[in-house]
Length: 243
Image (cartoon, rainbow, N blue to C red):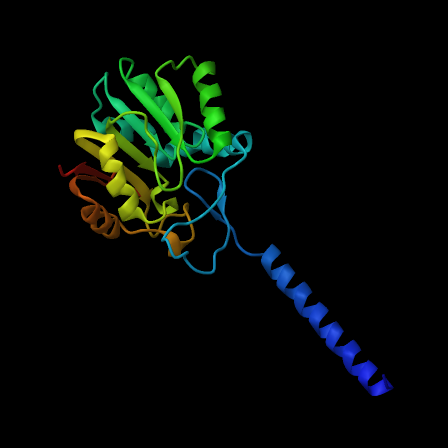
């Protein structure tokens, strides 16, 4: 190899290394946005083909510090959300995407004669939910290991609640069509998710406007029966399945 070729190879190598370092630095410095449960969503270039925002929540102890932060109550308003659900004390309820049980524990206390199924796709979260139920003596809280395409509820429920999770679900019309078999006659579905201008939530391109939620769920066999606007950063939509 002559000197000219050696010099060209060396120059190309330096350029490639420099570009690689620049890309790595840009990725490291990429902005992070809060998710709805107090954690953070990473930057995503484009929505995935199934319409979901995919993120792992596989360290329950870490996420519990964020998901169950008392400061979340100011904008999530969990007690007011539960009031709006008008639950019977003997109701059967599913909290889909329960996480560490922020809503599950509160609902379980509201339905002492009922059952709360706390469903999550993360095995570590399911384990944590069981430990929390035991620790807080919530005998009516049952953890459920769900899967990305199915809630896996052990019996039909009166209400399925999906908080800060709708945007994580892929193939939503298919998912919620299947969920109808896990709802009792006149069973309801409540969706809480982020407004476009919320300071929390997934990246803006992954936020789903309420009109789109209603369109997707109409296709899945649900009718919108209630809308609530008391949440400062989110919407609360309540649907009933069509038999």
